Image 1 (cartoon, rainbow, N blue to C red):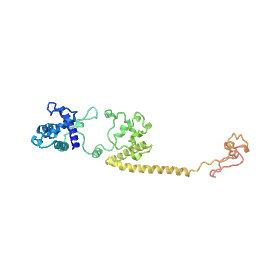
Image 2: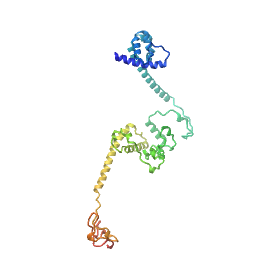
Image 3: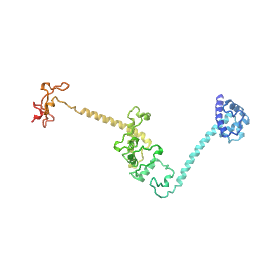
Image 4: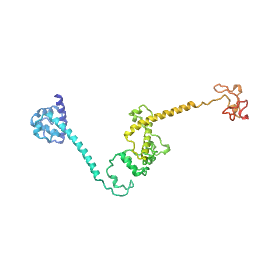
Length: 348
């Protein structure tokens, strides 16, 4: 019972503060205006068994103010607060339902009364057709993608680069080539690096790959501990650009967020397999490649200047003894050398 009275007291204090601010001229029981005194409020609750006390409390509970006095007088303070809370919840729910019903009705009204769009001119900047200020399209994005493909064809629309991105905080983030490629949904040249601020103003050939703050990617469990996770994500984004470009050409919807989770798992697995296969191929090439075989023939001896050392004293810096013989290759004998007692300039 004590816990109930404490919760009732706290709720009543909060409601009474709000009520006094809105209605400073309404009288309260003696001591009730002392907002900081919990005992005063508790005394008011204890005295609320009288009709006048309940009516004063009634004024503090907005959800039950529409109920008749006779009904309020028949309840104690605990029931009054419970009833107020229940009616407040019901009112909020009814308000949400009313808003939902209004939105549904608005849509039905739009569908039943389509807007007649007059003809005119539009250059996308100086002359803007009034139809651009109609309400936004509320069809599915995938449906709009397919309708756009049917309307504007595979090549997209004429590219310009004067969109106001500053107003949404993306000013200076798109390269000129990025503007060109993004107007063509079927472009296979669309890459994430085209929307990287350090590349704006750089030539296409000198554009840098996108770098990211790895701290921003710390929550990606699939890439935890991978120092190349930023580069991997950029590769994946470029891959999705390519897939969507192919879907545009084939008149298919773009990949949805649900699709991306499945594509990510498949792509990541194939990428790991490709990297492992490439690594194995390189290792095989290394194993199959025969090491360069150095012979023990003195190269200086086979030059026009000859070797300054005597045959018995000619050695490499590591102490390997070198022979003073001809190192000319013999024709038709697959790398076999002459190795006779004459220098290469004297080989016949």
